[in-house]
Amino acid sequence: AVSLELANRQLQLVLTKPVRHIQIWTGKWFGITLMAGTLLAVAGGIVGLMLFLRFLPGRLGPGDERVLREEVLATRQTLLPEPDDVSVAVQKELDARGKNADAPDILSEPQVRSILTQNLRRNAGTLAAGQARSWRIRLPRKPRADEILLLRFVFASSRPERLPVRITWQIGAESPRDTTRQPGIEGVLTIPAAAIADDLSVTVRAANQQDATTSTIIFEPGSGIRLTLQSPGIAANYLRALLLIFGNLALLAALGLTAGCLFSMPTASFLAIFCLLIMAMGGYITDMVQSGIAVETHVGELVGFSQYPAPVQWVFTGLALFLQPLQEFNPVQRLAENELIPWSLTVRGLAMYLVVYSGLLGIAGGFFFKRREAALPGR
Image (cartoon, rainbow, N blue to C red; front, side, top):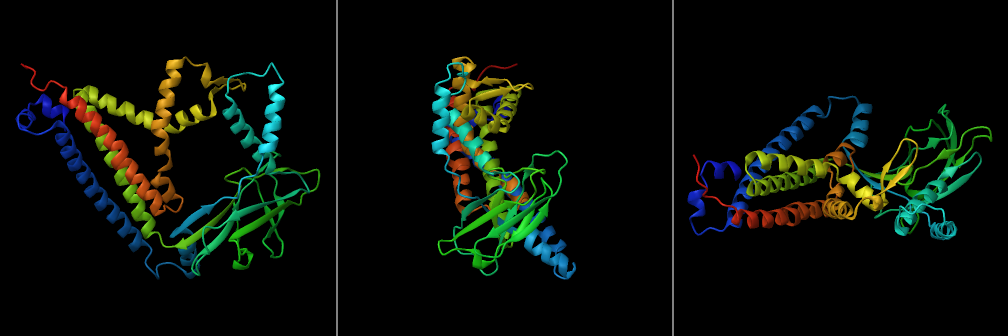
C-alpha cells in the first residue's frame, strides 16, 4: 500500500497536494481495515449459517439435542475459587532464605515472593489419603432459570499408574456425593440452586477417600477446581469474537502500513514478519520478565533474567510492557472452549487494537513517512 506505490511513483501526485502524510496513512488504514472487515463479515456469516443449518431441530435425537444445547451450543463463564491466603507462610520462607548467605541471587524479592506464593497455593491443594479441604467460590450474580451451574474438577496423582481415586464431595449444605475418577480426566457435578448461599457464594469440600497406601491427589490452582455458569446460545458470543478478530486485523493492517512507511517493499515485509514473530512470543517474553527466569536447563539449573546484560533487559522489559495487554484477548481460543467473551472485554480489546496500538503505529508511520524521501531519481 505504501512501499510499492512509492517505488512505482504512484504516490508522488498525492504528496504534491496539500495533504498531510498522516492523512494518507489513515486513509489507507481505513481502506484496508474496511476491506478486511467486509471479508471477515462474509466469512463469519457463512460459518454461522452453516452451523445453524447443520444443527436444525429434528436432525438429531433427543439425547443428542440436549447435549448439543447444554454442552456445545452454550456459553460458559468460568469462576475460580478465592485464592488461599499464604502471605504469612511466604514471609516466613523469605525470612529463612534471607538468613542463608549461599542462596542464589538471580531473582528479585517480588519474583521470589510470586514463586513462593504459587508453590504454597499448590501445596494447599494437595490432599493425601484421608485428607480434605474446602474452597469458596463467589458468583457474580444469581443464575437465571435457563442457566446451569456446574462444578468441574481435574486432579493429578502422585502415582504413575493413574489409578482411579474415590473422592467425596460436599457442595454447600447438600448431602455428600462420592465420585471415582482417574487423574487427568475432568469430572463434572451439577450444583443445585439450594447450594448457593445468600451472599452468592458456593462452598465446595473435597475429601480423598483412598487408604494410606494409595495416591496423593493434587488440585492445581486456577484449573483444578472451578465453577462454570452455562448459558444457552452462542450467537452473541460468536459476534463478540468476530469483533475482536476484526480489531486484530486492524492492528495487523497498521503494522504493515507503518513498516511500508519506513522501508522499501522487501525490507518492510521482513520487518512485519519479524514483528509478528515477536507478538507470537509475547507470552514467553512476559513470563520471563515477570518470573525472572529466562531458561531452565534439562538438569534443573536456572538462568536468571537479571544475568543478562542491562541493554538486553531493557529491550525485553519494554517488549513485555508493550505486548502484555495483548495477551488477554484471544477470541479464537475462548470461542473454541465456549468461554464467555463479555462485552467489557470486547470493548476493551477494540479500544486497545483500534485506538491505542493502531494509533501509536499511525503516529510512528506518519512521522517517518514525512521524513522519507519520495522523489528519488530512478532508472
